[in-house]
Length: 514
Ligand code: HEM
Image 1 (cartoon, rainbow, N blue to C red):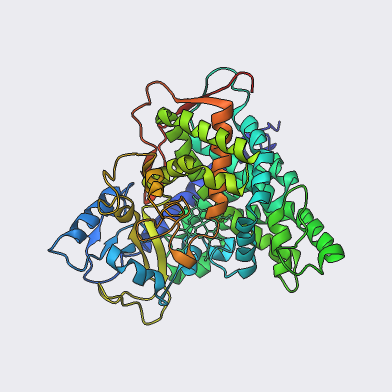
Image 2 (image 1 turned 45 degrees about the vertical axis):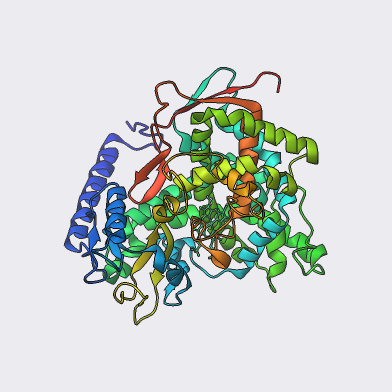
């Protein structure tokens, strides 16, 4: 008699066969990988820090930074033995040179790390970037979009919170909030609130992580043979295609509307805006001379990955820090209420005036950037790359600078390891400094969004979203660290990534009468 195992109607013998075959497949794959284990081939003569099987490369980077600052090692270049993606680290004195080098490319780096062939990461997409810039230039519209979904996002993720409610996994919570709040301006209300859409985004991120983990260790020379046959790659393309299928009707309706009515408005400034969200589409469509739904879906897939992971990481650290450093809660809430009183609602001018909150966010970001690497590049010149320091490094090498060397530099910041939520607020009080030291500012001491004209185009969007998130939190909830976890820090290093500490646990309680 057939038994329903896992709800799929498998018989026990088939289930056993599946488990045993899976085990054999897994073991054989690991064996194949050991045969082709890639050597750590980087720049000869450059010291290697860490070992490929390290689970955290924090000590390796610290050691590299320490050595590279000393007199015995004047060039200051070292390499980090990240498994299957070793990186050459350049010192701060070569940062602008690396940034400006035409021998190395950010797009090639992101395409390499995030499997651009399947995820579209690293493609040159001018129209998408113009759409993102339009979101920053029309911040009032985007802020309305955030506000329209922020309460819904909190209710969906945290529930009623009538009593103290424990959030023992911050990242999955902020991932869902990031997905809801960003999907509305990207694609509209229908998808931002659709659980099937959220499941599709989650599945895409999960399968990408599996695919990267299984594909990267395979040397490129034999990758072409395996690649499309691998179950992880198939799962990734299936998840991506599912997202595209779900978004296609929304894209088509924006496109039809534009073609029917808006075609004369050939400028993103005058593009008609959909009342139900999806503004990014309305600003992106006029950028194309011949807008096509399939290409717009591709742009959306690119931006969703680029943004949701970064936003959820940023929100996670802020959520824990506002609970941990509870003395900031009342002043930040007061500041928000003052600007609301002055402007009658949240808008571009109001978020600019929330300087204490901005400073709190920037300090959190300084100590918790997304990665210990900044200015990430891949050498694309067939002749390699030669900077003024270090040897010529070969074509294909991944490189970066140590983010902490700027973020934690005593030259830039007094007591650099200390959390000082008003650090940047005070800096902005100095005459002529009001517009500097914002979360979104970039300079030699502020490199987490990269530098100058090539810096992250989504950072203004992120900053406004985080303010809407924190303002809602502070006005509707009491928040505290779960008793017993007060000494935890939000920063936790997973490989080279800076993620939220799994022991960073908070509790929320809805305020009465709001
Ligand atoms: C905490 C939040 C974020 C961080 C830390 C971050 C950081 C970065 C960094 C470091 C780069 C590389 C720039 C370079 O080296 O050339 C980048 C690129 C990019 N970011 Fe962000 N980002 C964040 C959020 C977002 C959001 C919310 C969006 C979209 C709305 C976005 C869209 C992009 C795009 C499209 C690029 C590629 C730019 C290009 O190809 O030139 N990012 N981001």
